[in-house]
Amino acid sequence: MEDTVKSNVLEIARLIEEHRGEEVVALYVGEMASWTDYFIIATVRSSTHRKGLLRSISEYLDGKHIEPLNRRKHLDDEAGWILIDCGSLVIHLMDSRHRAFYELEKLWFRSEWIYSSNSSKSSSSSIS
Image (cartoon, rainbow, N blue to C red; front, top):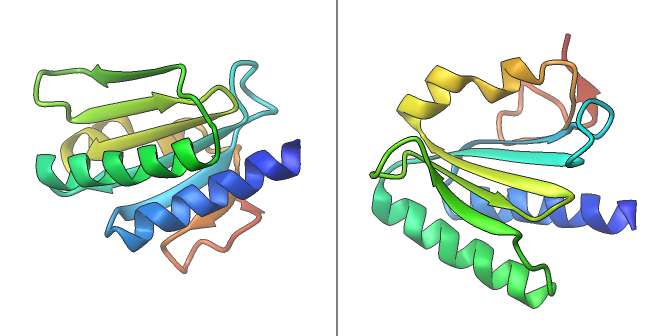
């Protein structure tokens, strides 16, 4: 099952990047978090961009029969941060302001990076 989840995480990260999500990263956080195994974090450029990504992600999840536990808007009415909790994976779609402020990658710095759209961070490496 772990391989299936990781495969889905990588496919979702690539899907987000293909739809012009920026600074897409996928982290394995399972050794530090008891409530999930993976984070996918991406920056969106606008509310229209966010809606398009949500639609594409929803279609992917539906096709894989993955039912999100919730879809919540966080922090403000303009939805600068959308969290899609799928249990073993959590997707964070953030505008650049929220992404810069919360710096989730730095909070989870001991995580294994399994995907990064930034080629300077190689897949399957940990940052320290």
